[in-house]
Image (cartoon, rainbow, N blue to C red):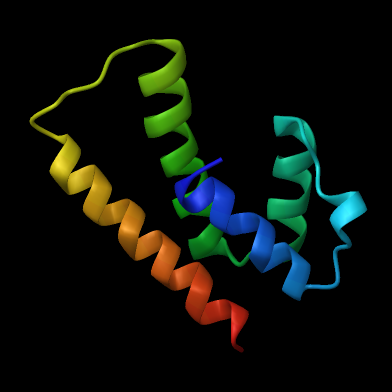
Length: 87
C-alpha cells in the first residue's frame, strides 16, 4: 500500500497499535484512522483513499491533467503524517 494509506501504518504503530492489530481490510483501517488521527489527517486520508483507490483503481477515472496536483497533495499528506510521528 502506497502513499497516505501506507504511511498510516507507521503512524499507527507510533500510537501503540501493534503490528498484529493493523487491519487488512478498509473497515478496520477506517476505525483506526477515526480513533488515532486528528480531523485534518482523517480528511487527507479519506481524500487520498477516494482519489487513488476508488477513482483510480476501481473506477478507472483518472484525470491525467490533474495528477501532478494530486501527487503534490499526496506528498504533503505523507509529510504531515511523518511530522506527526515525531510528536
